[in-house]
Image 1 (cartoon, helix red, strand yellow):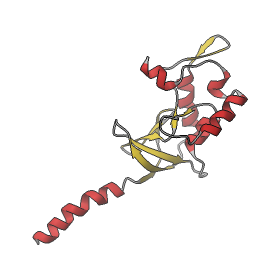
Image 2: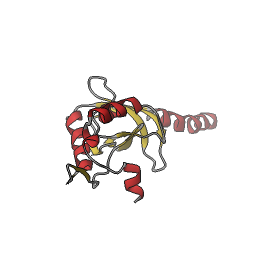
Image 3: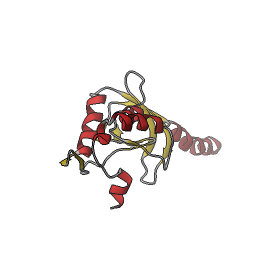
Length: 155
């Protein structure tokens, strides 16, 4: 009996950890690069979106680029289930994951391609080409002036 208890004590933590290697569900959108499924807070891998309170400029006029980024992600997901595959855990305890929409598309790629988020080169070079395409086409953030999100947070 003691042996069985010892085996369970050793196995249960690893079973719990493996159960969060991926998660599927209908997310609540926190901002343009963070969502919550059930009680799991998920940071989209390889991207950085403007903060909710961040403003940018377009044609010399302030616009709520952070809110636009969050809204676009919310509309893209549109209450559908998403599947997220864990890649890491960040310093805030959030799951860092690559997430996929109902059609199997990479949500981070979708955000960067539309200029709603930037490739977060500090952690990945995953979406650099998509960012370059968005910049060339002047989509989203690239249609105006903005402070990159990591600098905006620092300031």
